[in-house]
Amino acid sequence: MLHLLYIFAFTILASLAIANLVRNLISLGIETRRGSGSAMSSMPQQARRVAHPELLDSNGNLLDEPLLVMRSISIKDAREQLDAIYESSGGGSTLDDKKDD
Image (cartoon, rainbow, N blue to C red; front, top):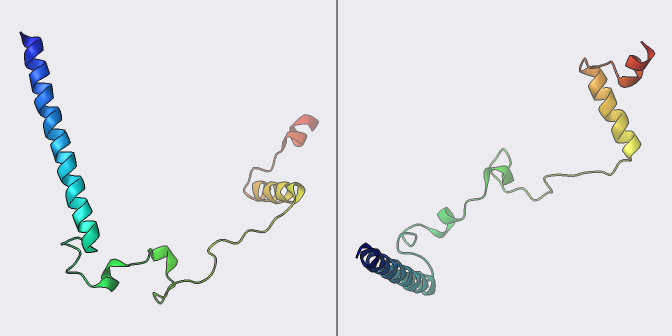
């Protein structure tokens, strides 16, 4: 008897979920055809298109240049630069120094 009750409850819940899905899809389609949502239509066009803060300079103007410029260096140069940074940070003893001890 409980099995039938569970199946009946699941059927009702599944029907409600599908009906809600169809209703939301229909309302989304209607809003898309209108051009914009009812809540968004009261806002001016410029207020909706706000650029991300990282794309603005200190005056608030849009940047028109690349944000990251990388140059290619060889593996040997990169290793030398990393070793120099490591040694200047206080971790100066390398494996070669430990082998000599």
